[in-house]
Image (tube, rainbow, N blue to C red):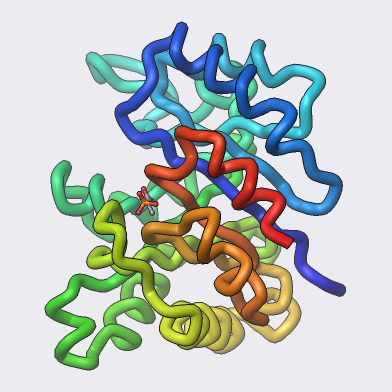
Length: 249
Ligand code: PEP
């Protein structure tokens, strides 16, 4: 069975609540699609108004971060059950900005993946190599290690509902995109890794996105590759281009 494509916008720390609602209204006619899952991963403060604003459309909402405990004395944090109750369906985990700027390691990321599933959220698990590892040629080993750590104790049934985003760090926000062949090489290797860790059916079901300067001009070529099931889109998700990426065909 063909996997359904999924195109998710990662808004990062952009859009005040009122700007967010305006953007949703502007994008609404542009992102309509019957055969692509469309997700906006938005800042925590935008979740409630954006969930309201997308009602009646095909758009699903994702969050960008949460903490692994359900409740308690964790000032400033938001839990997975809170996100679920607010209408969130997807959650970005392991983004390189959280790994590099906020020091999140694979032990925490693994705990987040398990907690997200427990709360009924679908993780978009990010992985990817630095420019240094790309140049060294050890990037496939690095990504395999990330995936193996991040999915420790996660069941095959859960992985079937997982989205993995391959995001080479050197291509995020830089305007430099991995070529479609470079992206396909890694997405294929991730699928093979899932097959080794689980089984062929699980590897066939898991959706693997490419992320890193995806735009209206390169989405069609990237998404045509057999192991690329859509994209995680940063900068271009904040403008009309996002509609062209969703309707890339
Ligand atoms: C991202 O934020 O995950 C990303 C890929 O950003 P950009 O599309 O701007 O490179």
